[in-house]
Amino acid sequence: MPSSSANATLSPDVLGVHLQELRQAPPLVHNLTNFVAMNSMANILLALGASPAMVHAPEEVSEFAALADAVTINIGTLSAGWVESMLMAAHSARQHGKPWVFDPVGVGATRYRRDVAAQLLALKPTVIRGNASEIMTLAHQADSGRGVDTTAGTDEALQAAIALASATSAVVAVTGEIDLVTDGQRLARICGGHELMPRVTTLGCSLTGVIAAFISSGRDTFESTIAALACYAEAGRQAGLAANGPGSFSSAFLDALYNLNESTFSHLAPVEINHVC
Image (cartoon, rainbow, N blue to C red; front, side):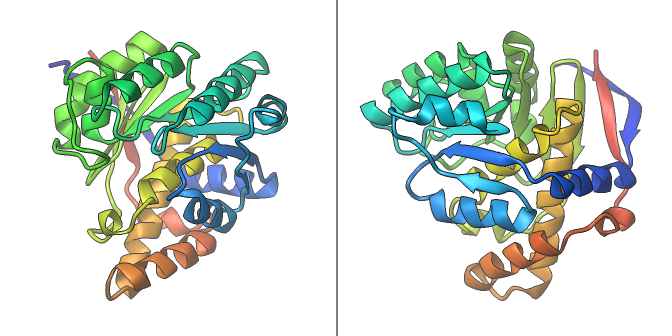
């Protein structure tokens, strides 16, 4: 197991700057996501301050990916036509220097998903976001999984995340009760959120879009990913204070995300960034 030593922090003020810059120049985020996630993902990106687009026709997907500020690809509801569009979008994003985020939903469930994931990994995603089981599968630490639910904790995926980041040159985000972010050399943990978040479908898928919005700025991808996760966690924490269950939480989460501002994070401790030894 790799060890780590603290050598830097990301202050709450910096998190606020990331959010402020995003809203001053709202990014166009092109999402090839699953059928279940489309509506909530679009609403969450709008609440954040970004501009979502759900474009997947092979006749236009390459052109649109080139126009967008960032692209997300989610393999939740695969079919041959969708795979064609995903590969085209990823290739176009790479060709035009646009960051793209890969969400390997349920990658351990079937060989088809693993084969598609391998093709997408070859097109060099900027960020890979998944739960612990998904990240472990991608890193060849496991060969099975149970749909989109995780059976492993984020810390169990730490070694896999570092290995995957090192092998792909991508930033890897392992999301769960505590989120991990690594680029293979640096490591950060983000706490927060609320216990109701796993009870609302597609919140994880929508987080992929939020990460894409933040990394579109051209700032350091590792730090931008931390900022995205910290914003999401804080919105979840605030939503939990107002919610009575999953239904009210969903609405409260949108409101909390919309109402985030530069001063929102003032009460948070700095995020420690560790060097992976």
